[in-house]
Length: 144
Image (cartoon, rainbow, N blue to C red; front, side):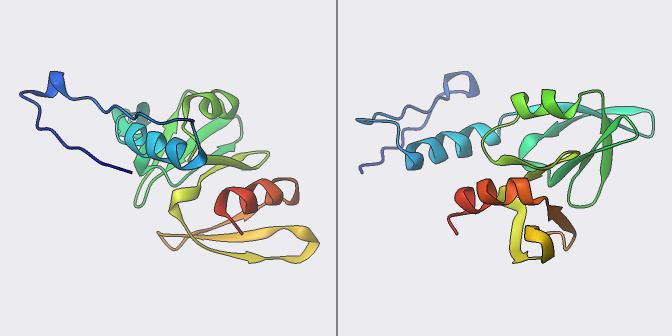
């Protein structure tokens, strides 16, 4: 595949065009990669609102009807419900339990667990449990 780079005169002129015969998994992955740097979501921490880049999210968890977003070093709260976030986030995110969504690009390792579950080690050295009903989809997305 030929790749062409042209320098734009300004930020307003920046765009990416992908010309392909069909939209394969590889093309979709390229689209997701380009889009993941641009998406942002409103979050709060210490009564202050921040705009968080979606690509910085490691996982999202719902606890006591509140939704928390975890990055490498911080935890934020958001007003969105998990099902709303599933619609907002790109293909790099996967529901891994009833109350959790994980960024598959932040997974460092996976290990099978008893009862068909899996443990996923993240790049920030945290671990999340993948419920058995979501293991098949995770394996497919990771190519294992």
